[in-house]
Image (cartoon, rainbow, N blue to C red):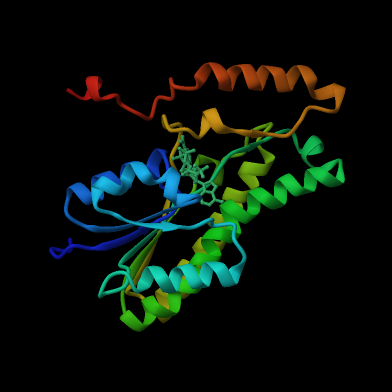
Amino acid sequence: MPTTPQTWLITGCSSGFGEFFVRQLRAQGDNVIATGRNAATKLAHLKDTGASILDLDVAAPVPEIEAKMAEAWGLYPNGTDVVVNNAGYILSGVFEELTSRKSREQDMLACFKTNFHGPLNITRALLPRLRAKGKGTMLFMSSQAGFHADANATGYVATKHALEGAVECRSKELAIFAPDIKVLLVEPSYFRTRAFGNINRVPQHITLYAEFNKAVFDAVTSAVAKEPGTRTRRSRS
Ligand SMILES: NC(=O)c1ccc[n+]([C@@H]2O[C@H](COP(=O)([O-])OP(=O)(O)OC[C@H]3O[C@@H](n4cnc5c(N)ncnc54)[C@H](OP(=O)(O)O)[C@@H]3O)[C@@H](O)[C@H]2O)c1
């Protein structure tokens, strides 16, 4: 375990795991670069943690991501030690409704931009710097959806499966070419963040699936704020 403070760059810090990581890491004295969309407003609540705040949409075009990573790297004398690719969202809908209309392809592409290409673009931008430094850790928030498939979850499951494949390949390459750069995949189950209250649902339009979609919607809606993977402050004491 490192004894000197580490510098962490975390994506998607407006809520959920990202916000929790920022608070926890700052409490233990590490440096944190908390990033998020519309950071001036959405990350304002993190200012008093002492984290550096950086505006970052992980789905932004590559040149923008590269410029942001250069900016982030310059914020602390030793660049960044740990990169946490946390930003992501759930896209819900049966396969046929997600793909049967041209516009629906856009939902899949948008989800891939955030959950898959975003983390890879960030990795590509930071890897040369980490290799020059000789060490570092890259963490990727996948999901149980990275190894398990559910009906009505094609979009999300596809992005997390793809992410896991790419990250595992990268990990094996780094084991050969830069063994002191570590790669971690995290596969949470159901945690009480904003994720399930904030699902992006493809609009219902094929009658065959109407009843099934409603059942999924009702099941998810009734589970929001009851996800088992979070202990409240009260249950901890
Ligand atoms: N909660 C769970 O049970 C669970 C289970 C498995 C995996 N995960 C994964 O955990 C990660 C964090 O999710 P969470 O559970 O903490 O949910 P959350 O509270 O909804 O947080 C998601 C974060 O991602 C950000 N985000 C979404 N799209 C973005 C983009 N294009 N650029 C930058 N930030 C973006 C959101 O920012 P905005 O406020 O701007 O939308 C928010 O800060 C996700 O990758 C999710 O797939 C969660």
